[in-house]
Length: 175
Image (cartoon, rainbow, N blue to C red; front, side, top):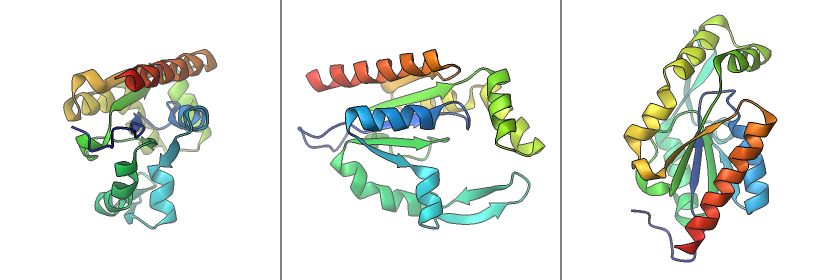
């Protein structure tokens, strides 16, 4: 169970394959709900929470322990929207809701190609989405009743996702 004060806002995890639409959603949620947006990739870069650089995938390898130490006091306060493309290493007690943003492969492929992902990184992320890896990871790491799937393909999907999370928050406040 969460360690939040009774009057604290919840912590929400927004996760999914890179390019699925997490940042778009997080930016709007943080603004509209007055939450703090904690972009874990950005935090890791800013604070050098990187163990090494993976040449094959052309990406940094996260030092999860350093990131956890940084986030712990922030999470205890509540009111955070946490964004990251993985979710199985975060403590379950941190989150009152986990939203997994998914995206059809064709749209995802185009978005990642636009980001100039190398072929290995591109195919790996597409496979991750095909097999529902992040959604499965969320379902295995958190209680079923807090894990929700959202679609991030179109602007209409993003608007619906925003509405869904805001509705969840309204219901959470009533508890």
